[in-house]
Image 1 (cartoon, rainbow, N blue to C red):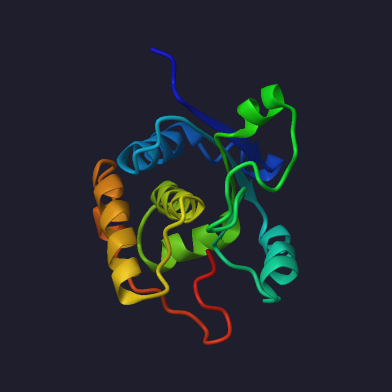
Image 2: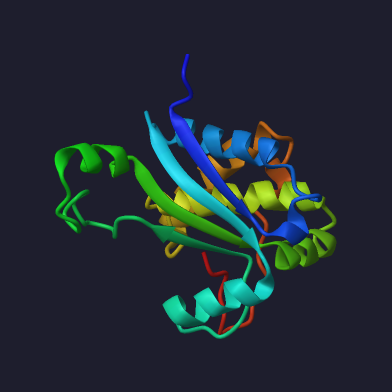
Length: 179
């Protein structure tokens, strides 16, 4: 059976030797399956704090690094395909594209150290969290957080990472956990 999910990776050279995308890909695929996605494509970028800080500044107005940023291909409530007038064959090829997840590896390493878990476990958590945002989930209200955390916990439990899913983030008032 063909894999219905296309996960594209962009990994800065500094991290290619320390990051194995296979187990992160598996967690992403479990997230998509648990969310009922029949087909999906997305890109995950693993990069430096400085690159994520620039994105955070440019797109969120927060001039600070963060762990993960999600850039959905469609805004909430926007009809898919409405943003671009594309020929049918091209529209079909991009219809399943969810967006991009960008993770700051050094930031993730600091969090992993702080919370006493491995870098790989932290990257799985951040990837799952970012993909859930691409799918429209959020943690901006208690009910929405409970729903998002429920999926996150179930997916991460399959990797043995369920304890990571519900942790409370210690954040500065000016830079809430970004996503």
